[in-house]
Length: 147
Image 1 (cartoon, helix red, strand yellow):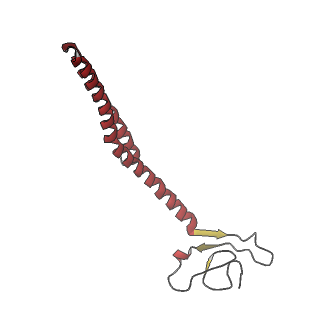
Image 2 (cartoon, rainbow, N blue to C red):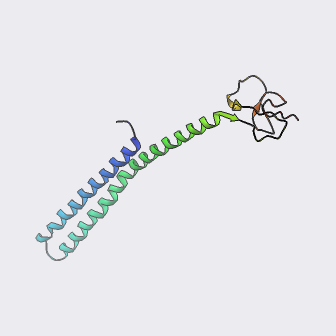
């Protein structure tokens, strides 16, 4: 019931638009049917009035649902953005370094390293200039870099 709320709002707004449009077209046809009782210029004015009912009805129908449709679109897009940020946060939260592409003499290490923002508040936060990982002291425990 509460899944895909944005899509449901968009579908309901489309249905409301079609319903309102059908009502205004029907009102225009009913107004056009009254031309049999009229004479002269009144026939022409009634035809114009019938067309205006349909055109204005279309505009009113469109404007009445555009906000609801836009709201549904916002809900869908905000969910997509939230999911992407959550995935991106999970990807950046943990790094796994193999260091197999490091030059000879640097030992291969397989460890988990957390982002600087996830480190404990105490201690100085440094970034290794070689591997760009967060470290607390030099030499870098991951790649061995020392200034």
